[in-house]
Image 1 (tube, rainbow, N blue to C red):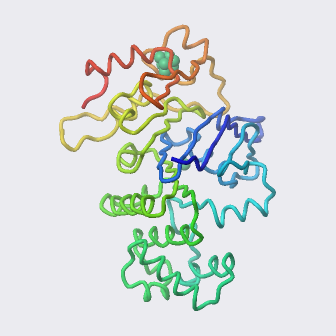
Image 2: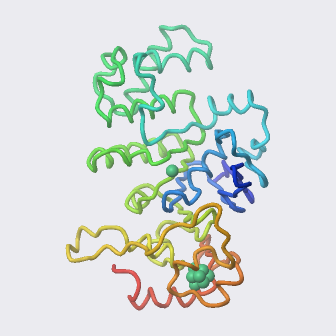
Image 3: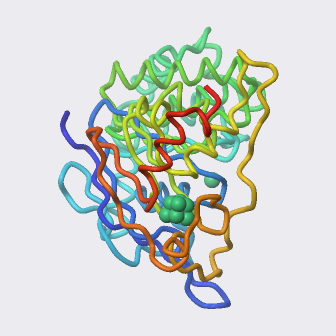
Length: 335
Ligand code: SF4
Ligand code: MG
């Protein structure tokens, strides 16, 4: 598949009262057309900052300090504001956890769908209304004509999320970034929205970057998975390889903290400890304070990225072969 997005050696930095801190540390990945990459990790691991770096929406004290972001082969990390705004209207769209932050409560759904269409496509209001109704149909909203005249608060959470997706699709983006889009929804609605995202990806051949802390969501939508910890990529691979053959202790910890519906006696095993603060200096592997395998070497030298026998599966852990053995013998993952 054709590469859509390419991120090389991304470093994202924040200015704070106590000096500069790095939230993303030398992270590289790519997304092809028609492919979903899930970026997964605990809250604060740098996954949202990675996505905001790509779409050029970092807060004012943040900046890309190194590396590059390319869309269809062209660098976009250094575009002037106005051109980046154009990119966001036409090539890259983003949806968030809480649709109310993206929707304006005092404007009708129809108005909010028409505006960007009129602006970007220079079409008449009547044509924009027609396209707006089509978009609502496309995201599975019943009675779209009626919905056009409603205000966001008149819709359920799931319907609002569908409207936000419709807005994101209005200008036919090649890349859709979704940051925890279903976290606030109950499980049934969550499943429906994930189905919709999968369906749209197929139909429109979009690339999707899904940011989530939830391995259940990863299982539903990912083609490939990138696991992040404390600003670093620690493991990346095809979704089946990550679930069946995880090699990084942190990935295994994430998998072990997924509730298992088939086994009611299964005990949740969250990873002990917590993410370091951005100010904390950590020598060697950034996961070592929480890792039960950590050796002196881990505490001194950061592991490089190792390739593995499996195509496209990489891991940054000195002991990944030993860890893999433990998993195979059933000592680590309850499956
Ligand atoms: Fe644990 Fe060492 Fe691997 Fe880091 S490099 S994850 S500390 S075993
Ligand atoms: Mg986040």
